[in-house]
Image 1 (spheres, protein in one colour):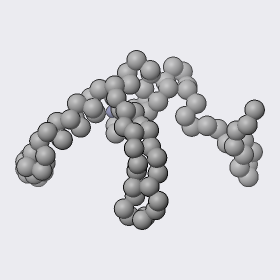
Image 2 (cartoon, rainbow, N blue to C red):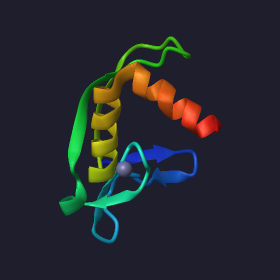
Image 3 (tube, rainbow, N blue to C red):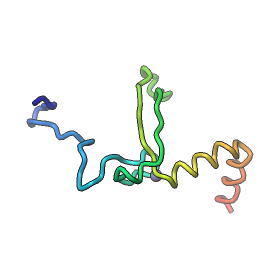
Length: 89
Ligand SMILES: [Zn+2]
């Protein structure tokens, strides 16, 4: 029982598993089956543009995005500037 209703009737839960996919990598956007969930982020999401209240989040990531995020964290700002310069050519 339960579920949400909108003006057009019941609202489908966008996080209901579909065809073996149980999540979405929040960075690349690919659907994830349980065995490919490689990590998760839990905390507060603060939208500085909208200046809204912090929202609790729990999001999952694939192994490629997790590795890329770790690389970005380790390289810091100097590595980010190098990537920018390489992309600009
Ligand atoms: Zn990903």
